[in-house]
Image (tube, rainbow, N blue to C red):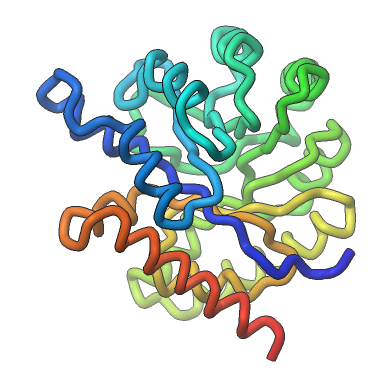
Length: 253
């Protein structure tokens, strides 16, 4: 397949809801944030409905599905409850992630290889309902091959370890993680999977990873919401879009 020229940007609005929930009430409204992000250039909206509802709520998901004009990507654990919510809500896409109550954020990739017996039926149910299914996994051969074997059409490569190594200025670790991401993306595409990436990305790392021709979409949230405190959400999304476009342009050089 030819390289994708336009790299999609999915904006995760979870932490708008985190701020709202700190005091209760309705402000700031994650649905309003989603609409602002779309107007500024986002290609879709991601929201993680956690078991403990620590940020996004069921009502947020219902409103997002009803009110936004771009695809909704429902990030969720592969539990019976969440599968039922997805089948009832019918978002454009779901991204299955590991989830623990004690974690601050998603700490690693889903164990697709070890959980094939549990995941396969759930992936099939979502796919049969017309919902695109993505698995949030590390860029490891066993995980990628398991995703392909279960006919999950999309993987999202967990970029957290690479981003943490960049932040810590650990050049050796960053280079090793970059090689793993690059090779994993190539393998996934060769197996017919659509390849996304996300977790911990900022302007610089998003620009760098956008140069990988196998990537179709980046999903970015925490950094964008944090930067929006200083520059506003629309300007932050525009700046991220510009960074990704620079990286994609470098791909052709």
